[in-house]
Length: 289
Image (spheres, rainbow, N blue to C red):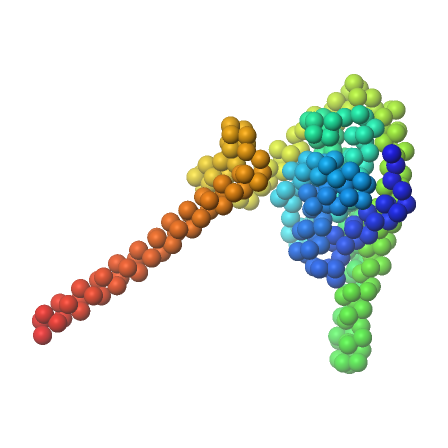
C-alpha cells in the first residue's frame, strides 16, 4: 500500500497547520495538531488505518513527551515527526509484516520518528529564517508611522506571508517524502533485512528512545524526592493492576482531588487560628473593662 497524491496533500496541509500561528496559534497548532499522539489519529484517518495510526503515534509520542522549544531552539521538529515519520512508520510496519502493537514495531516507529525529526529541524530553521523576511517587512511598516501602511501590512505579515514559508518548508517536503514513502520502505526492506545488524541496531536504539523522553519529563516534573512516589503511581497501576490510560487518569483525578482538599485545609488552618486568637483577645478586653 502506498500513499496517494490526495493523501500526501492532506498530510502536507496538516503539517502546515501544525505550526502556522495564524491557524489557531501554538495551543491548537504546535501543542495539539503537532503532537504525535493527536497526529497519529489524523494520519490514521487519512491513510484509512486509525488503529495503527494511534498505536504508532503513541509510540513516537513517548520520545517527544517533554519536547519544548525554549527561545526557538529545537532538537527535533514534531510536525515532521508526526506527518512524515508516522506515515513512513505505518508503511514500514506493513512492509515488514510486523504487528503494530509489538515492541519491534514500536522500536521501528520511534527510530524513524527520530530520524525524520532531525531532518525536520533543518526545515524548521528554514521556515524561521524565511519568516524573518516577513518580519522585516512588518517592522519597516511600523517604523514608517503611516497608519494606512501599517493597517495593510501587519495582517498580511501575520496571516498571509507565513503561508509561503510553510508551503516551502512544510507542505512541499511532506508531500514529496510521503509520495516516495513506498519506495523508501521498499528499499529498507530489500537492503535492511530484519535479521541484519542494521535493523537490530535500529530496533535496539528505538526501544531506548522512549526512556529518554520519560527521563526528560521526569527532569521537568519531579521537584523533590517525594514526587517520585506520585510519578511512579501510574506505572505501578499499569504494571500491577493492569489499568489502562483512562482508568489511571480517573484514579489520578481522585488523588488530585484529595490533594486539593488537603491543601485547602492547610491554607484555612492559619486563618481559623488567627480568628480564634482575635476572638480571645476581644474577650479579654471586655473582661478588663
